[in-house]
Length: 357
Ligand code: F6P
Image (cartoon, rainbow, N blue to C red; front, side, top):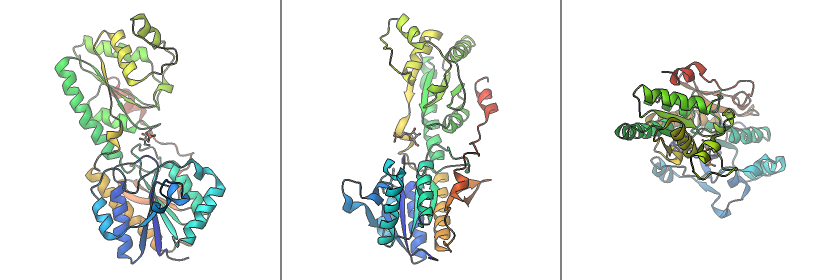
């Protein structure tokens, strides 16, 4: 096959701001080239007929439909994680079904798990392009993932408000942001808001040290410091019996209760004799309207995806992932994008600076 005539598109994994804008961009560029775009619902599940309404799994995306989704939050195509796609037989059937429906190529908008699925489809003869749709910014081959900038903006806005209330009440704050195993959202939020402390999954941390720093800041007159924590940072905590601190102060705690933002705030309150409060920002990061940066990135990524798929796809066995390098949108083979020997860069110096200023 030299040129795909009917292209499929799906969003997979956690939704991220900009996914709809990328679908619109692909749709507009596909139509300009006289090709046809099919929207596949609920990630790879839509290829497997696993969703509750199988008749609704794949739909033709006409210009009227897509123009309306540009400003929509979340993902119009719906999304899901699809463990069944780890099975080679399942993937083979998906590739066969795609061919049967005349869908000759696929645009996959999602994170690294979605990319692995796309790479396997490429190996089965379905040319795929990946657009890095995840707020986490956890892919080493790209300076930005789609939705990351928006997620940071949401967190910065929230932390600025929290810091205002912290100042009003002389109360420190613990604010938890998303990012799975990547501390980029936490780090960027911390530097953009002037937060005094940050904890990320990339670095070991010590609860007593955090409490000591908070006590030090309070002593110096800063009674409303902010600690930004990245979710999933708990496994990097050095051993510390925080349950004992809580129990010794007559709060109820069970042996199997996990450490959470709220319990961390309570422990800090008890250790530093202050009224620390916790906020978990959560899905407001994912369901936000894309920032100008993410909208523009989505447009350029969509355009590049269609350019690649409408060219010669005969040597597409490794597919391509779209990313940003030196501030410019570019493409690289999936194998390179997923290369485990190229770990994601983490700025340790900046981390120490935030925690010491
Ligand atoms: O990958 C995006 C993300 O929001 C991560 O930051 C988070 O760990 C994960 O998805 C949570 O996913 P869900 O709540 O959809 O299971």
